[in-house]
Amino acid sequence: MRIPLLMFCLFLQTAFSFAQSKEQYLKSRQEAIHADSQLRFDKDIQLNDEEKKAGVKLQKMQQELLLKYSKEKFFPPSRTFYQSKKTIEETPLFQIMEKMPKGGALHLHTEGTTNITWVVNTLVNTPDGYVFWSDDTPNYIKGQIEFFKPSQVPQGFRKASDLNRTEKGFKSALVGLLTFNEKTTQDSALVWKEFERCFNRVRDFVTYKPVFESYYLEGFKELIKDNIQYAEVRAIVTFSLYDLNHTKQSNYYSTDSILAYFRNIRLQLKATDPEFRFRLVYTFIRGMDASRVDAEFVNAFKMQVKYPDMISGFDLVGEEDRGHPTLFFLDTWMKRDSLEKAYGIVMPFLFHDGESDNISDDNMYDAVLLKCQRIGHGFNLFLFPGLYEQIRKKDIAIELCPLSSQLLNFTRDIRTHPGIGYLRNGIQCVISSDDPSIFGFNGLSYDFWSAFMAWELDLKALKKLSMNSLQYSTLPKSEKELAMAQWEKKWGVFIASVNAMN
Ligand SMILES: [Zn+2]
Image 1: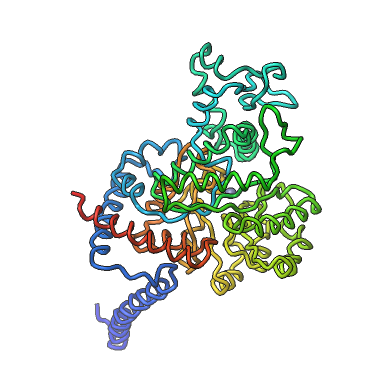
Image 2: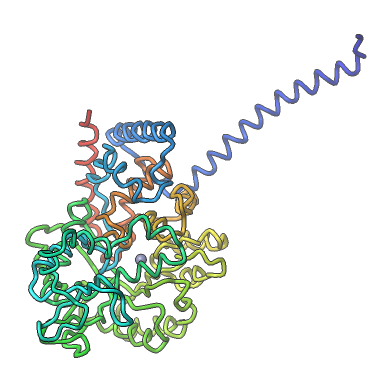
């Protein structure tokens, strides 16, 4: 068959231009990748030779694990945490994450920090410790802990030490009631309800004065063990403490005295762990009415004047979709400037916002416009692309809690957690664990492991996340500089230990 000359020329031209455009396409693709890399949150981090060497090692471990999980068709961050916890712990990478100096844990809650097994062991060994060990009633739920004088024990409560002696498996049954398990995470409609039931069960343990200080000492020591040097804990300090002679209602232990006890805890820690620091975020409840929140906000200023070393900012907690929107309390937030002037202090907003899968939840606008210093979770920020630039400009950090978001059913698979998108968009973030004891673990290592694997992070990102947790803390300048210097020393030791590994 004869091909007309014109057609042949056209064919040659098309083939040639295709070759040219393919080359051009690949160049454009490379440029697009480069442009994205210039946006990343960790673009300013330069690694030295030792760090680069350690980074290659970590990357190799990560890639080998990815391959292994792909072959086994079991990728831990895409399974529920309870299916993957043991698998995570068995990896040498987890030991590295434990060893890594992680800086600060900036998103924790008082009732979700100390290991629950320690709580139960302490309960059975503390006189007058009782557990409601019967079917739920309108007043009490099974597993609810409280301390009573023997003559004042309500029906349905049993002495924890007796139950431990007479009922086989009592302690593990109680731990089960105080923590999440795989079943808890299966029904999204009930998950928050169960979450609050866990808090309600443990609250009167945490607020019992005779165990109050040892509870926090234990919790902070667990953080120290996980190589965390600083914590900012959301604390509802208006929930009064109690003991056998002073009921909660008597308000014998005022907010003021509770903060003084926290100072005692700090002094005790200073003796054993002088580099560890902690501060409290004055916290109240999102579901409360506006006048209560307003009164708490004013009280936060009074307490911060008296305990400037202790109060780091203000926040509201509780299920975001069931509580009031942040805008509901606008009259209170508008008072911040005048209160700051009147008291001569600053009160950073550290709001829980965007922890929602409700498409109409737009609290992120308020979190940004009210200039939060950090935003708790910020999970649904991706719904508001117009806020990205403002967040970067105002230098607001997002407190990502990957496992919490998974366990509370905001995402099933940590790979699709929007946090990775924020990091790639140059939004500064920190990693924290929210309520690790209720989720059944301690510290930050599980969250770091999950983020490192699910988001295929590298050492640069890990370094930046750790540094951010001190840079975006509310520590005063001089303390921050000291904490950073301490962190740098620890980081150097950590890098050397990774390089010394076989
Ligand atoms: Zn939280």
